[in-house]
Image (cartoon, rainbow, N blue to C red; front, side):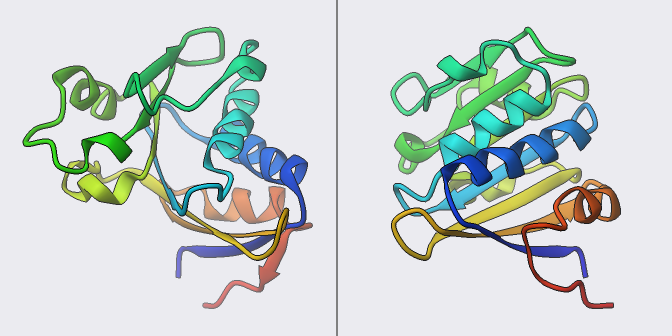
Length: 164
């Protein structure tokens, strides 16, 4: 099984979990983020940006109204996309499709399950649930080949041991 279950007790931990993922992501990886409004998806992306050594991560914001924001200061370009407003669009904009399929960049998409058919083969799916005001359950499904390293990096937050 390629799934890791984590508990984040607070926003700072959510950012640190994202950071650990960002440090391990190989170029060309697609990160699909899902969860209800307020689950912490944008904080998680801030962590990924920090893990990629993107110096401007503190100013990172949700691209809900711009659809995609790109950052080029880290070890590889990061594209932060939000599918929320594209729920009923007939097609994805070309620049978003191009970012998703770029094997030299990392693309993170909030509300990714809206357009699951565009997911590439190499991805990490992250689902976030609200447990209380600050506590989150984060489930990661790895299809990028980084599960062993990810479990080690995240062992302090692991909620359930891996199953064979």
